[in-house]
Image (tube, rainbow, N blue to C red; front, side, top):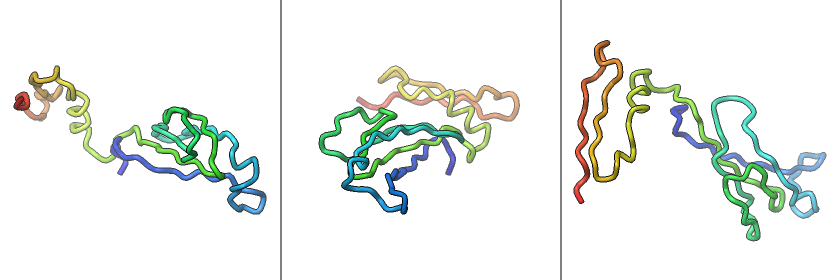
Length: 124
């Protein structure tokens, strides 16, 4: 579902001319650069699984390990919920000041939107 919350795990393989996974050749440990070329998505994290790889998960270039890299791509566009629902979500402050309260208001209340909803602070 393209709701701005979904994540896809992508397997990247280094293959030879015959399309076979390269696992032992020096090229099986090459750097792989990852980019979302089109569509509403962004790279969340990538890693090769290599025990010596200490690069940050947010790095867009990863050294493959035995020809493999994993990438996590998150959708960045909500295409599955109503426009009103998306507007409400944009106005929710997730932190809400810690132990404070929040008021969620539909910005188009006069146009058939929902009334304000008060969210009490959680019990301490």
